[in-house]
Length: 142
Image (cartoon, rainbow, N blue to C red):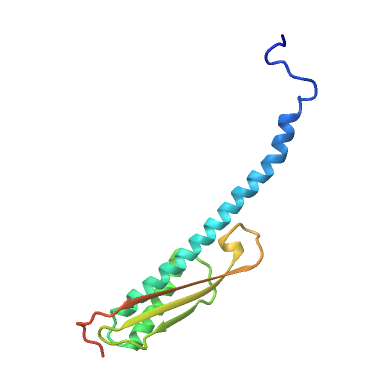
């Protein structure tokens, strides 16, 4: 009968070899999960900015004020979120700005992947979001 715990010849370095092979793969998976999470978080920030913009626009009295307030709210929300978006494209659709109508805000933001994923990653990511809200049908709109 063989002794328990006794190693068979040639197995001394097997655990270390397995660790050397598996550790880099696990590290890569963890870094990929972090990068995907950060990109998803940045997308959430852009969607939040679109909602803030449409909320600011829908309570205004006229389309001109709605566009100005939507742009201010989007810019402020993106700055507060810490998302680096050098020149976001903000489009406020006020073509149906009447009582019972709607307002829509669309944002397109091109940000560096080094800012929203793992530092040092080259390239950029285009993040976009649209939010629409209805204007109160019993409100006076000029």
